[in-house]
Amino acid sequence: MLNIIHDPESASLGATVEAFLNRLSGPAAIFVKGKDRSRTRVICTLLHGNEPSGVQAIHQYLSNGITPAVNALFIIGSVQAALTPPLFSHRTLPGKRDLNRCFKPPFEDEQGETAGAILQLIHSVKPEALIDLHNTSGSGPAFGVSINGDTDHLALTSLFTNDLIVTDLRLGAIMELSEREVPTVTIECGGASDTSAKFVAQEGISRYLAAESIHAEPGLDYRVNIFRNPIRLELQPGKHAAYSDTPQPNADITLPKNAERLNYGMVPHEEPLAFLGSEGLEVLTAKDHLGSERLNEFFECREGQLFCKHPIKLFMVTTNAEIAASDCLFYFIGCAD
Ligand SMILES: [Zn+2]
Image 1 (cartoon, rainbow, N blue to C red):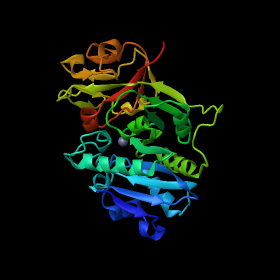
Image 2 (tube, helix red, strand yellow):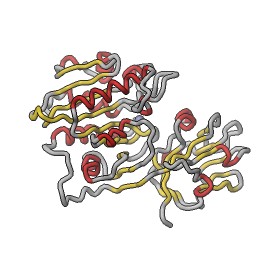
Image 3 (spheres, helix red, strand yellow):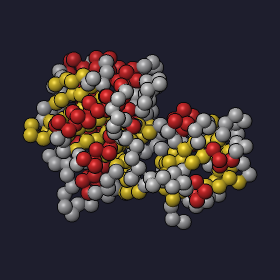
Image 4 (cartoon, rainbow, N blue to C red):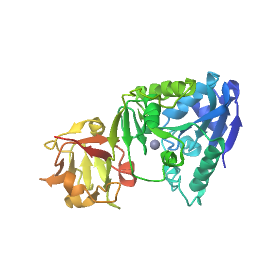
């Protein structure tokens, strides 16, 4: 199920990330002994096969042959999806579930079994913390996501970025391990093709694995901004999005081609967000973490266009129609006027 490797020799890793993934050939766990062998920190990545920054940074870290401060366990998830040509273009294998929605029972299908094996391994090493590295589907700055905003989670986040989304939403993502006393933060390093994403992953990994302690020090201000409970704007089942600067007749919603420029920005209520089709707002849903529909509270349709009623801040705006249909269009939080 999981290919387990201990202290790999740099020469055995392959010269490129592609060669490295080919050698792993499937979901893998790599143990590296640290200076202090009584403690372990985990880094997980590539749960989504089209998000390369984490595995690129791990390949580089391992190639450099650095001895971490404590034992390191690297988990590399969707190796086969990543290797399906063209390289790093598949979030999941066609027809398979999203691995980062499978960290809750039942662990029955292949993805569930992989997630179950990863959880078992993580529990067996009793780690101090877990970092899960991702890329956003659009371009944008890095931020963390966690289910817990306590100071330990802020300290972990601050190794990578200064913004943290804290959510009460439960989707079966690996960051939900925080509920079982493994402080866990997902780091969205930025877009897969953003140069900055690679540096966020590389520098964050070196800081995380070099630090003597990663726990919060009393009285220290980690200067992390917290955004609580963003809401997902989703398409209703069977509806689809297009990305164009003119309304597309077959789409239920047409977002601008450069929609990802909205990432992290505040959108005022007079700025149109998208063109809507003949069904207007009906094709959308925006349920909060409690399951309450909030669509009409935040959005309205005016002359065939989507507007927010109050200023909102957007995160994780995608420009990929497939992700828009299967996951969400974007996350948002309301801002004070
Ligand atoms: Zn991801």
